[in-house]
Length: 161
Image (cartoon, rainbow, N blue to C red):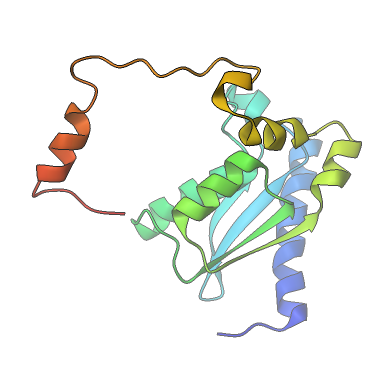
């Protein structure tokens, strides 16, 4: 189903309203997102990082979680995500793992940085070799390190994704 610019704009307005309501209720940052499938909202999310003490409770992640529960599926094929702001690196990862058809966003990451939500350092950290990142990340092997992978490889019960 191909949507008109007006229809996309209408969905975006819903995501923006979620962000504004979140600010009004002081539940988290000024971010909102929705997931739409077949002309219906199947997932809604607001940034709840401070309300839930959960750094992963970004609007897009919240909307993806709700949409996946609604669909009883871990993928969002046939869905579109509308976000009040360009997704951060964590949300981009969640978006790619959930596999929606498209993502539309209103504000840019630069506009978010102007009000104190600057994700640029994360983009820069990801590009660095592990040994140069500001949070140490080191491999630590044990005799059992590969056991989960061997178990996965031989499992007849796995659901591949």
